[in-house]
Image (tube, rainbow, N blue to C red):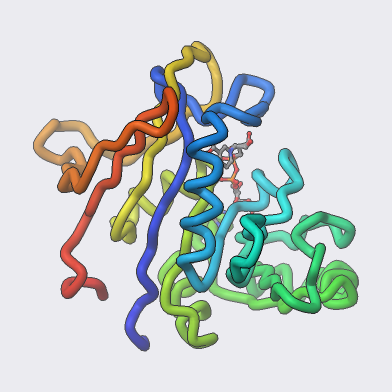
Length: 228
Ligand SMILES: NC(=O)c1ccc[n+]([C@@H]2O[C@H](COP(=O)([O-])OP(=O)(O)OC[C@H]3O[C@@H](n4cnc5c(N)ncnc54)[C@H](OP(=O)(O)O)[C@@H]3O)[C@@H](O)[C@H]2O)c1
């Protein structure tokens, strides 16, 4: 494969590690200062990626809204082509491309759904899926690299964040910790298969910066030159 794109994760979690309540509400866990940081970070990347769960729950536009900043290409992980053609990820489609990555099976078996998304302006990109119908993240990153996009800003949600960590595909993360408690809710990070503490992920802490009442942890998971 061509050089794999740089993968940067970003999410806002409560003190007790949730990215949403039990009903899926996540707006807004972090304060205004960190929301501005999130938009600035979007503008620094070639692509912004979320899972279909986030599209269906939040209907985000996924553009950079800081005045004069360029918006990255939008990438949705959507094995079964469930993205609604009227979703806000197709807003401003003439200027900001949207790629819907699906399974090869769905591309073959659901031509009408694919057609509706193409009509909405999407590029449909089929990739291999595993036995649980999860898209192979390395194949997703290959497809991104093939479009000359060299960095991907992954904004969630929980399953997608977990999958990138589990596959050890994360280069850097910006974890916003907001001083609120949610209790039962959606975990920021699910099962990473860690049984022993020696297997825990231990990134290098690049910085810990207060933004208003939030703390932003910038974490490096690998040296830039090892990225492949
Ligand atoms: N606080 C924050 O920063 C933040 C940010 C974003 C989202 N959120 C919240 O997170 C929640 C959504 O999280 P979620 O876990 O339900 O959904 P998600 O992570 O956005 O999307 C998960 C879906 O993506 C698809 N997918 C395809 N390939 C995958 C792969 N390799 N690994 C993982 N997923 C893959 C799967 O659906 P298919 O099988 O249909 O493809 C999967 O169910 C919402 O409540 C949202 O508000 C919070």
